[in-house]
Length: 202
Image (cartoon, rainbow, N blue to C red):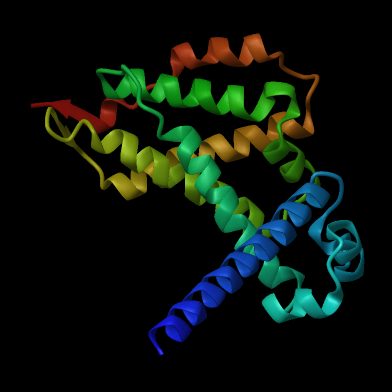
C-alpha cells in the first residue's frame, strides 16, 4: 500500500511538471508572437500552431488568449522586477533615481529588447499596466532602503507610481520616435533628475 501511494505521488509530481511546462511554453510563445503583432491580432489557432500544441490542450489550461496573457504578464512582471531591483552602490535617493532612470533607458533601448518590441506592438491596457506596476514595485523597494537615514515626505507608493508613470510614458514616446533622441542624449538627461524634495536627511 505504501509503495502504491509513493507511485501516485511520483505520477502526480510528473503531471504537475507537465502542466508547468505546457503553460510556460504557451506563455513564451504568446510573448514571442507579441513582439511581432498585437494581442488582438493573434489567434488561438495560430498560437497553438506556433507552440505545436493542440487547441484542446490550450483550453485545458486557459479560458482564452486573454487568460493566457494575464499568466504571461505575471512572468514578464517578475523579469522586470528582477531587472530594476538589482543591488546598487547608490548612497542617496538622488543617486538611486539617476541609476534607475539610466537602467530604464538601457533596458528599453538596448538592441530593442523583447519587452520593448512587445510594447511597440501592444498598447493593451493590461500590458502597459503590468510594466508600469512592476517598475513602481521596484521603485518602492529601492527607495525603501533609505528609510533609516531619510524622512520620506510622501507615501512611497505614491512617489513610486508617479516616477514609474513618467518612466513608462517616456519609454513609450522614445519607442514611437526612435530616431528623435539618441541613447547618449537620453542618458545625459539623467543629470537633471532629482527626488531630493521628497527625502529629508534625518
